[in-house]
Length: 272
Image (cartoon, rainbow, N blue to C red; front, side, top):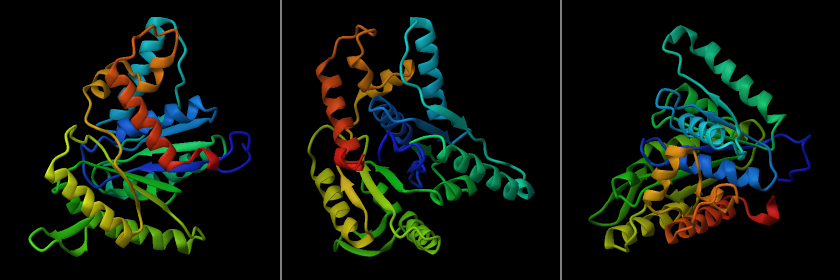
């Protein structure tokens, strides 16, 4: 992805997991700001419109900038509410598809934050995806979306419902001429200590990566700093801004390293 190649279609990143509470909005916001700081134009879509975590994050950021009289990078944002009338869903699908298609000719990257349950918005977002990022915690329960595992024998019985969905989506994209979907599973809200449970989850994820064709990275720890920054619409990447005059703590620095490592895993510098 080259910031100067504005005539090319945007790279579309969908942050998705068929489970709520995995920290999709935190990753979406930090990735958007990271790309903007590198000179790319970014649009964001919040398809989890009722909960609206990403929308609230960006709203907090705008208010903070207005209150402090400073400028920080803010992506072009669209909040989408689901259509409750079943008969209007086809038109709603078309509208979302048009919005994403229109934005793809105006921006270098589009980041889509999806609902935690599958609906037509969830499905439509994946149809446009170049990269899918799936946050997951270090919980054996969270592994169920990826695989049905016999914990006694360690045998993987069958793919989970979300892994099956991604497989179907890969087949759909291939039928549309897109031969490769960059699927990344990243740890998020990870416990700060090394436990047997955490090691077991990571071991399974490494195995599942080979079976189901995704790349796995440990990702982000469960840090209070992410929750605190949300209230002001800030990211750990903003701490270096001289206008903020905020002292970098050890937690800030560690979180910043995690975000940088995640961004480079998703899109290595040589590929940008």
